[in-house]
Length: 397
Image 1 (cartoon, one colour):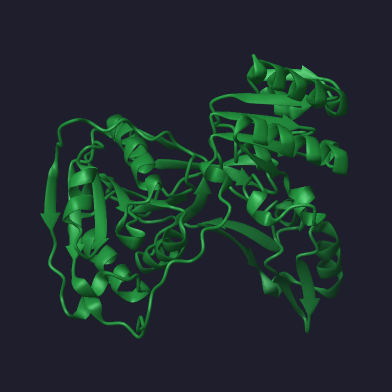
Image 2: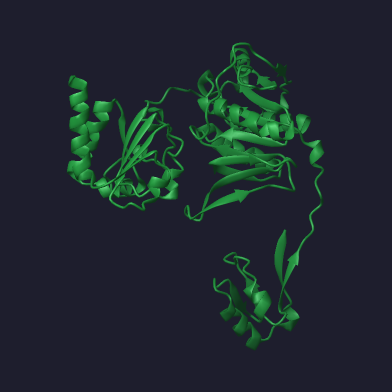
């Protein structure tokens, strides 16, 4: 860790005013004879270089971590409603690739009730050991017992990295467990890489999508991250199971909770563009009423769904459930046709893993062409009606 230290004895009203003007972020204030630095500080160290020695940059040494004591890449198996969420299988495949770099085993932790069938299923996805916390009182998700079980596993088996799906359950559980373990958590990762020293490189867009940040947690373990559904490929299951199921003890203390589940029921299924095999996505360049009608017609001809970018949701032209991107849904269809979409990082991160990407845009330098497999430069108002006629003709043959 590093910090800025102010030598208050060297502060005078004159140099304090000068130092305040140095800071480009307005993070320095001078009140009641004391200089102070607020959370607006970006550690540019301009005040250190030009502050005449009043402010000092101090690099604190952290105790070196023995990384050899932490071993394994662990996946949390989300079994909401008694069924394994498919993001779990995707993470198992990714965990196996990460573990190959360090030679570590792949673990899975499963918390719930009557889990034997689901635990067996994970053994077809490259998991070496499935650690199961099975108890009737764990049938419904309650944050305290699930956190206690998760922390019990970490304390006993010390995995180096933990991958959690960014589901409704995972988004609640991951920060709670990471905070209790006093370690870091990176949310909504779009890429993961493993160093030979077992540091997990967690990559995600930052600063509004202007950069791709590479985040590591070198001084604490485990390393936690959450990953959205459809980011990684789901591996092909093996015919024969391989690995071991380990049943963990569930103690009474582990089940203590201030939450009482009175009733559970299935919510009405929403529109889920993440499950569509074909998507016609509309951007600002194709947001006119006539173009939206064409997009709907094209989607129906292809047996797909219509989706959109964030500006169209903000303009109340589409419901947020139809939005693709970091602040919307992550999709991975067999075919996605992008109409009038520039291709900002936030949007591309939510669809770039699609099998086939077709982009139509008037700008030949649009970023969407960097990820598209087929690029068409032109006016969507002219191209899409012709495309619809071609598809109709092919269907009538």
